[in-house]
Length: 158
Length: 158
Image (tube, each protein chain N blue to C red):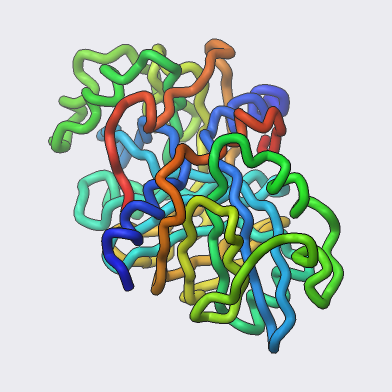
């Protein structure tokens, strides 16, 4: 396989930028993700690719819930904030306005929309797990255009 | 759950538009898809949401291979073409220039890039299956911007 072609081709997959909120026994965390897609209308299912080696992965495994916070165009700084390494106890969320959703995971007040998900399946893949969530709650804060990976100028893929 | 908020929120997921090429015992087909994401760097894995009730689903189940054809900006007509209902025998591909890749599935000459995938997992989800493929071959025809779902003006999500 032509590794350079593989990298360039995979970067043609169109991705957005999201902040995934997670919790475990009262602790909260959030991380920036781009590998997200819907995979069913009925029931409403989404897939999120979650790094195996992160704190959030273990929190999702334990609590079986997560929130997708949708960022709007112009909100790259918010995405940037959640790229920081995680520290258990909610430090990443310290300076950010949020509330806990029905499932106990953080919903960012600045996000344009959110969906709360119960985990239905976690499949080992490669360096990320394939986390399948069913949307059980949702809200729209503002009907703005979502932040795309292209807008950020970042690459995550290939 | 607020069903309208759920629909609007899920439509904030950023998606592209792709033509998935499939084969089974010498027959070929292709269909337009939007629910695609990468889910691992190593090995390089992708997830495609594939409708359970389509011909292509059964072809993927049988042959365990598919190709993601990446469309470029301006190629909505090509995506439109592959929205047509499928007929076994390659009729949808009749007026389209393509070649068969290493895995026997069709690679569109007009696509800007492609990845050939071997199916590693097929997970039942809801109305679509969660098809996990490992990229084993790739090519870049032209380094153009990909076609986004937004550009087409279509909705597929919610």
